[in-house]
Image (cartoon, rainbow, N blue to C red; front, side, top):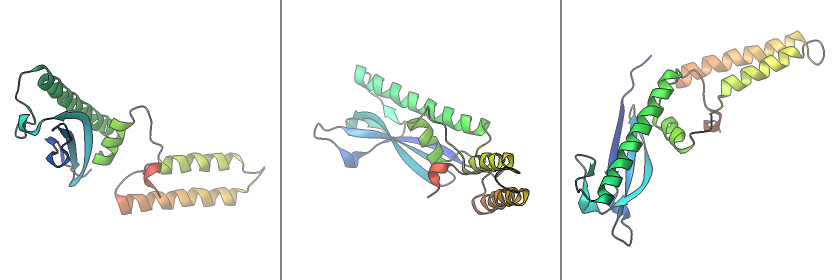
Length: 163
């Protein structure tokens, strides 16, 4: 398995300051050179944000809540990353973001779904299709698996990523 890099950075997006003078806090997830940003749904005055420490240094109630939210998001991102590794999938920033935004939904994989379809067709041999036709489905599955591994260096692709 090839080595992947992974980092999480929280930052205050000063280019999107609201009318109240607060800027949103985003999390940037980077894996192997690809990055994506997630809005943490909290805002802070830009002068109260310490970018080096990635948190607010003030000790008032609001600052402590924001620091708690940032810590919670970091823990959730790391948990999603660990879960993908345990599942044997290569964790990328887009998959981690999807896990955070839709925690209950399980992603259906293209080759896994096509393998189920091939097995369903195999059950129909003799009644609706011939064994030669069923063999063609299995051959197509083998070719698509080889292509996916050669082209994308992945075992399977999520269905929502295929256009």
